[in-house]
Length: 448
Image (cartoon, rainbow, N blue to C red):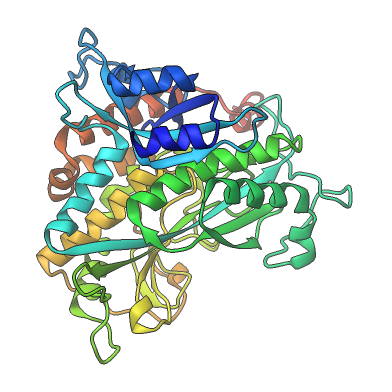
């Protein structure tokens, strides 16, 4: 009997939610009774159309005329991962959720599925005898219920009955205003085994950051995937929204998913980013060099939405170029002061709106290319990187153009997957560009 079957029976599970992340990181899948799930699991009968891999953030399916997906082809198989099973603590009935891989009927992986793309990158490190270790930091806003998308969002009201009027970064009393929802988040995470660490109030009104303890990349991607759903559910039960939009409110900072990453030698457990004397290794420097060269081309994976680029502006607690520095939070790539065992690189570009599997795949792929090509980084900067030129793409359209031309990156991620990204994101951009905004109506309607 499998571990998954044991888990279901030991916890008296009555219902199972089978989840896969689509390209945007939205949970898609099926829900079925536990007894039916066990029967289906044994017969490999959990199936979905491959089109979920190119389902847009709007819910629509991207057009198939580019040949990425054959609309007439049969379904693909959802293969539950016994190492990615979590309780669903907000239901009364005992329910679990299991993250699934997508495979063909012969067991071959679906090469445009987000979870496989991360596995593909991790295999490169494994073949070298290495294992990436990551620790994401995730920011989000708590906002008032917003039933009409034409109206701007407003910060959620805290215990004192008032909206925050100014920035309260690291404020203890400020974060205590949201104790009811934060306590539920911690309780839900504890019930699911999500390994979260510290909680702080960030610079935005009603903005919270929760950090994860470090661990294996696929495990942390699964945890972030489940965590985002958990936070949204906890907030809804307090009659507020939690949003991971990169830039949800005008004149407020955006929300990031900073990713701390290091690489261990599997045999010895040693962090290869540090030399025995405690200095930075060449591998760390090459890793940074890879991030500097290739991250601008990987932007559709770490800044995947039109809204993402409104976060990446000067003096908004977000990077704008590819500089790196030691303990310098104005740069894209920060090497924190740390012991040799904890030597790491923090990638500060990814937004909270990114699919965690693809964001991790992107940053680790860029670092890998730097190591393989022995790319020397620029000199670290000591002042503010905001004073230097804006070098990151400033629109989704620009980032897709760079992504299209990044041959080494596409070879690592898989050409068919990269084509699928372009199909989805270009259509999303077209849909966005067809919308007439409030700014246009306000300033152009009677003036031009």
